[in-house]
Length: 75
Image (cartoon, rainbow, N blue to C red; front, side):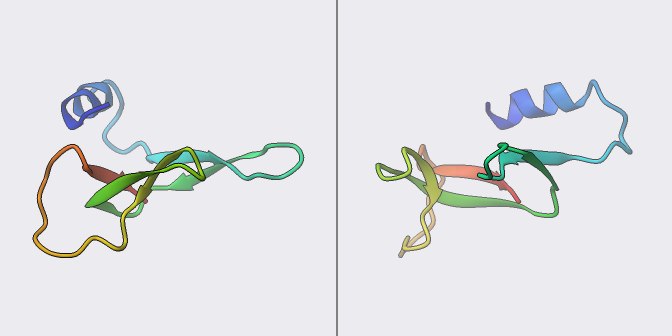
């Protein structure tokens, strides 16, 4: 999903509705946590083979460039 698609989707909901994101708690029952979004950042990301997903690239050094390795992060 890109920013344009997210904006279009959010236009369908009331302005005062709380925004949350869900993730698997990792417990035996696989409860899904519904964490409230508190921050929006644009950060570098990279694929991590161990977790088989993208992670925030905390080791990024140098000039910040928005490209395919940059993403809007909700946290």
